[in-house]
Image (cartoon, rainbow, N blue to C red; front, side, top):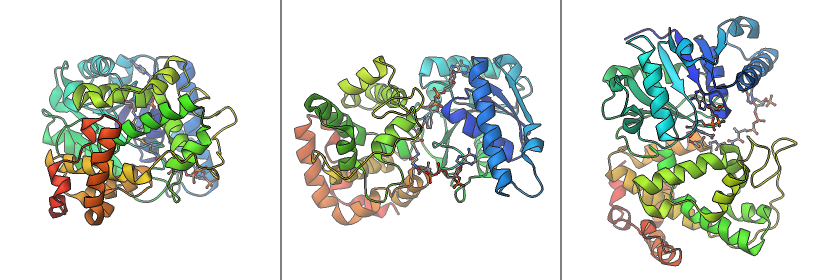
Length: 391
Ligand code: CAA
Ligand code: NAD
């Protein structure tokens, strides 16, 4: 297998900057690429601050210093220069298939023949991203979770044309990247379906969320109360802070993509359309559901709105987990739960469903009628409880 030394990170916004930091910490030479110098400068100072913080706490590996690691960092706004000597490219640009296709093609046309192109897409099939490039065997998915330095999960996805060698290199690179909270979990996604494992299982829950957001917006219910309804007691970040943290644009674009590829029932709701049109995208623009101008918001969740049934989320997720098993995206419900825990820091829905699938199926029948969303109906593998055989 090829030895990866040089990694180019294309797109260094929210995700790219964290990915670049862990690549540097693993010892790779890293080059940052984005369309504007100011964005690259922001990313470079995020990385520098992160490394200095770790140095101060004695958490850099062995004798390493922040200054030594930063010597391996380079930057450019020119994509062709960024990839000229790359062994491995990680793309973390906007979640739009046409733009990703263009960048994929240009990056692979201008990099060495052996170079792997790994997309950090949240939802788009890798086969679709590789469609217009001439080296589709070199294209894989490498899906990090936000923030990449702190979240353990990296899903490695094989497109229909990805070579075994590219996948193995992806797994090797993923496993080599340090995580500041626990050990990396790097499962291989076995079938190239939209959303892969974690985002796919959680995706239809957003149909319910968007319904709730539209309702709350119309009735003028404060977001903190909606947040108090949705957020589980042990979750590390409240659900609406998380939605802002991920970015309402990311949710919007993925909903559009799922509406095209999985079911029209995923079409974005009215409120998220309004947020995106007004540029209220969350943490990255300073406002989403909450105001981020003074840093991460700390909502008061003491009062609930009483408009959400939390069990509906578990039921919807477990039903989608059964679709994931049926389609061969992964082979075990335990992998689904493990991946959700590593990527989201909250428990997956499958274990609870092994005991309560009958009540959950009834709930899904009720809510698919109420929301007029056929996609939420329980599938046979779920209703029968036969998914429990996929251990
Ligand atoms: N470099 C160095 N240190 C860093 C750092 C960095 N880049 N980032 C954070 N740290 C340090 C902090 O300084 C802090 O250090 P101290 O403890 O010494 O103060 C420590 O790491 C912990 O940081 P936080 O205080 O920010 O940590 P927290 O306890 O508030 O936890 C969290 C943060 C782990 C992100 C937690 O809030 C969480 O689990 N949230 C949920 C996140 C989540 O669900 N992500 C997935 C989103 S979905 C997705 O990503 C998929 C998709 O496709 C959209
Ligand atoms: P972001 O908007 O913060 O960053 C994207 C960056 O890409 C921007 O800085 C933008 O200037 C740059 N860019 C756009 N076109 C470019 C081009 N042609 N060449 C170079 N740079 C370009 O977005 P983000 O939240 O970091 O998301 C990036 C990708 O990661 C998306 O595919 C998203 O779905 C995925 N993702 C996001 C999250 C999340 O929580 N935000 C988690 C996992 C995966």
